[in-house]
Image (cartoon, rainbow, N blue to C red; front, side, top):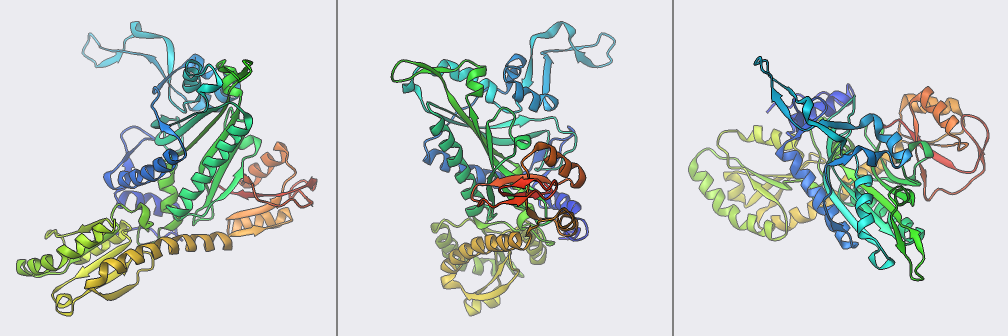
Length: 491
């Protein structure tokens, strides 16, 4: 098959858009800004879901589901929250259509106007905290550790498949606690889960930090994040965990009686990752030949392509492969044996390379005679011939090696593209010439942050949690600073 992908170096954006479509991950829908996630793309999301869901449940969380529609009055109860989401809300005003008498089509029935308009869920804090008011009376009802898998709508004007769409899929956790300390620990625990998932499953190294006030989630006291670096030198916010303090408890009057019988407001958190992770997965690892998928998230970990001339050769290969495939499956390896006679082996090789299948095995009559099989790695494009009788063990070890190799390559890329600067001229030069993460002193004021953003389009991605304090001068204003922060252009 012809890939026809633009080169990353020529047009990274066009390369990304074409790869998403040609690899059968997603396509634009008839509704502007929305997408259709195709089976292959959705199967990667399902792998992500399964891994994260297990991690949540292993730490005591349970899944629930809350309504898609939120009364408009709920959104207005938390001032920062409504300010943060007002421009992105889709609003339902009527509940019925009617046929026009003149046969010109259908229109909204003006008589079917809702008494209260409904917001299509942009995030669920308001509807969930209104529900928690009924669930929580005393300290015995706490903590509540709830997650939901859902879709949300944020009416974006400029969209890109997976990275920014009007509707997307995600998980959102919402927890309630008796103390501030418990809520903060929960927020950081989830941040650790997100970082572990990104690094151990996606193969993407991430920075862990806290957002500045201007980048904070609307309605949160603190927003913690993981930030990843893409191959074009831009950052991607890959997950956020919010310490809500008592803001939503106050807005919805959610109180509990402590052990002494004293009433107090509940402490809360919320946290989420979305199908944006699929975009990050593509941009962090893939190359000019197509997707490069980490084995832990690949829908197909091993594909077997027979090279035959007639039906009798198929039968011989089948007989040899049946027990081999069984051995691989018993090791938990997902195997696809592509016996289609409608496409030639070369076409299949190109297809599975484009789709990022980590390992490809090719076997023909000569391989049968020699009791061997050709093994091709997607990440390095290297090929070698291996004895077929031990191929299940070789493949298992190779998959593990590929998983580590992909992460190591991404980590080395991030290290090469992280620069410390002390002057604003150097800051602008690095940003223009290579991008990446820039560590620089910042005076901590929103005014300086806005000026840098307006002049360079770079933002403070995070204030690193493990960054040591050191006296310095702000790269922009020259005012005193106690710590360097991470800047970058971002998606």
